[in-house]
Picture 1 (cartoon, rainbow, N blue to C red):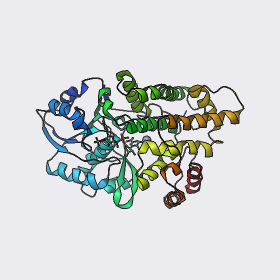
Picture 2 (spheres, protein in one colour; picture 1 turned 90 degrees about the horizontal axis):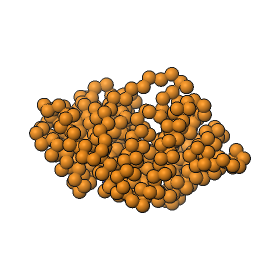
Picture 3 (cartoon, rainbow, N blue to C red; picture 1 turned 30 degrees about the vertical axis):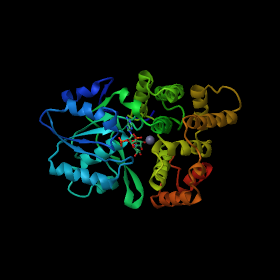
Picture 4 (cartoon, rainbow, N blue to C red; picture 1 turned 90 degrees about the vertical axis):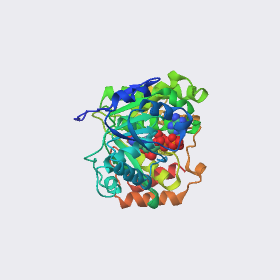
Length: 381
Ligand code: NZQ
Ligand code: ZN
């Protein structure tokens, strides 16, 4: 186990009707800007619950943070927030609204263009406090300090480190209205978050391994049931908690991490608009195929503990573990090959070019360069 310092300050407020807790958590004198996506919250009652809870507050609303939040939109929110002297932010939505709001929180206290903060490559120092009401289990953004911001003008998508939410409210009932494709992508994203922190070098921590395997086993168990009935409170509660626990630092203590699949996935979204969780379903099986030697021991452990693969030679067990992984994504209703999305060699070359330009060396061994990314994406064709 490597040395580590762990701190996660986010207060989790989970359960039915918990949106009403907003007024207990936000100081009464705050000037609150509430940020939203495209309007799903108006159809499922979340907007009404938030407004009722904050009826005695000064609030200003910002609408239209799109999936894969764009700097072009967030600049407008920052301008509005500055004009209204906002000193508290409440993000109501999925990962995109929350991520975008993390950049707004930093942008409100920054004089220059907020894109500088994304390019700076280090955590934003000064931010306005923010909180969240989560409507889509997937990214873990409700309990971490990460964000991913896009720039439409240049078709770029980069990670940004902001601040942690003060608190996040998770009511599983609000997920009942999610489109099935978003449920599939949320399950896929959650699964791959765990894999990025788990399928690395074996023997680093028994505790981390078993927490990771526990989340993967939970997802394998609940995914088919959720596909059948998305209105089951208990299932959606476990999905929500799995997504939060997958990317809030709890399974990353003292162990190495990969994230190469995510970096390739972000490029596929930036270039083709594919939903984040879907890109991962395409890239992860290919990453495992290409890096099967380095990741072999962990793949054997994963195959046995998550999918019950206990027979065959080492190579056969690795093959089967990768096959089961791809099959899992397909069982969610997602495609797992680039050609199925009409993506070909040209995109692979562009991603290789981008990785080379930024001297990319992703993965737990720092060996996923442009050339290796090309191999992986060719394996995904
Ligand atoms: O915009 P509205 O109308 O609200 O509709 C949204 C959106 O169209 C809809 N939706 C959300 N909750 C709903 C709902 N529709 C009906 N009922 C509900 N309860 O779902 C659509 C997608 O929402 P979005 O927020 O884009 O999805 P997600 O939560 O998957 O977020 C994806 C973004 O997060 C980033 C991704 O790259 C992507 O930009 N990520 C952030 C991470 C982080 N902060 O740590 C890590 C992840 O790896 C990921 O990269
Ligand atoms: Zn992700």
